[in-house]
Length: 143
Image (cartoon, rainbow, N blue to C red; front, side, top):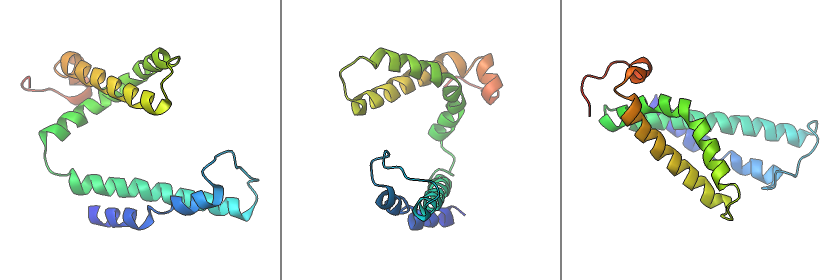
């Protein structure tokens, strides 16, 4: 199944190219939703989105299906990161909003700082506590 999904992704991942050719790189180049070109764009966009989704799922099945302590740890931490990330990301954006840095610099700073803080908070305050038990089940030993 994973190999099929990877090949499907490789086959259809080029779908965004005709989309860009139709609309162009500037999203302000919008047109009426009733034109045939708009309909073609919509269909290609939907097929491309599904292809990327299925392809990435196939790659995950193909390359991450073996048992791994790192993958297991990230899997356990992911729900905590999902639950706790929003206020932290908003706070980091507020701190950097007036900074003269380009967004392409601010974005990786926010992602990196947020992930470091969230992973550390998971390991120190969640993994072997009642919260960790509720989110992931009981852990037998502190790693």
